[in-house]
Image (cartoon, rainbow, N blue to C red; front, side):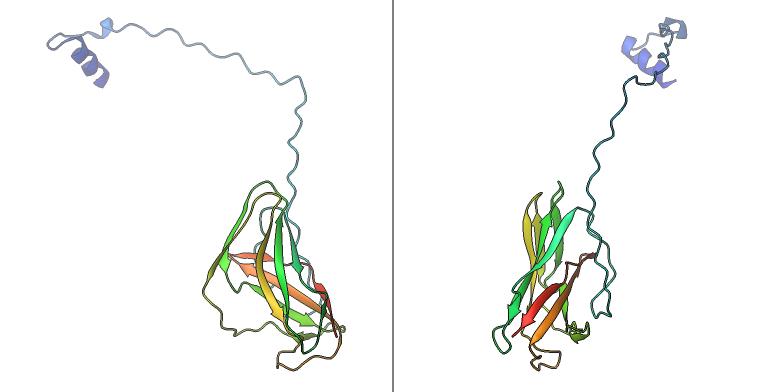
Length: 194
């Protein structure tokens, strides 16, 4: 009915149009059936997957659950391999290298990198503090394809949780980034305390 009214309007006001005045549509044609391709289709190259989170073999005070980063990456805790007892604290930085093709973009808190220290026997001698006061600062970490970004840093002064100096020896710093719903766990770092 609407089509007839529009046709009547365009033909001129007051002129009547009969349904027979509308030209017939051409017959519909159907496309021939599709044929299968004769050349083999090569699948697209597979995208590298993000590394799996290293497993923790001893009891830990760190967070252990969270979502992995969806993009391929490499995470390293970079810092000194020796630390002088009673000297300046060592600083270790989580470096995130984008090994994929899309930008890594994470908005997270300033205290989302946690760590603990284990002695040579595998016992936690400096646990992750649970009640640390932290700033409510927002950090934006960005890494384009092939770039490395410094995410956050931790400091350790060679002392246990009670603030007492630990004896000289071999220690392991175990860390985890848990922020923005993600869990990134770099490999453990061996540190010699002199």
